[in-house]
Image (cartoon, rainbow, N blue to C red; front, side, top):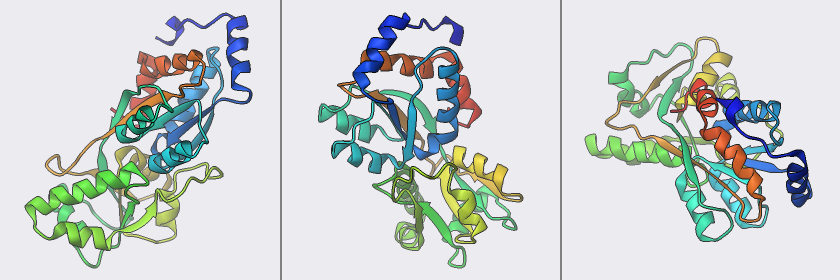
Length: 259
């Protein structure tokens, strides 16, 4: 439990904080927003250092780090990005801390049936929203889902990748304090949207009548989340990662749909 975590004596903590020369930051995948906010609040309430979160597409955040804007901690929705920063000797070796599958959100009035989900997204009359691949792992995982669908229905990858309206994962917006999907449906930009199940669950709470469903296992793929610290960050930052991996940290992640 959280109370078992040992906190450093105040004098040691003070030394660690002065080494930051500013408020320590966490760059985190946008899909982590709700869970990470609670993780930080819980950690801080129990004597831990307060971190300032910056949320955005993992691929975009990685480029920001490579360009010299280096946070103390980076929580990515893909091992690819943390591994690249480790190879570049910018971040320490990452650890996997969560997984997240893909789901389909549908505007009010559209009924979802798992056996007909592929037919639905292929329907030329249905406007399909996605995140941007390469910039955001959610987009990468979605494109992989398209490839899996193509194995069953040749030509589906071309159809889906061309019709997809890429609305998220394009840039880091530090002013945005909520997930963008509710606004997308409120502004009637799409009929359905593919994203992580955690995002779907959160959006359903904001949009009355919105439905969501997990894609079948034969085409689905699970996002792997990894977290690491800057090579220049004090080792005290590792205590926050230890907390995330603790039973209390895992309880919070599970609460928001991660596994």
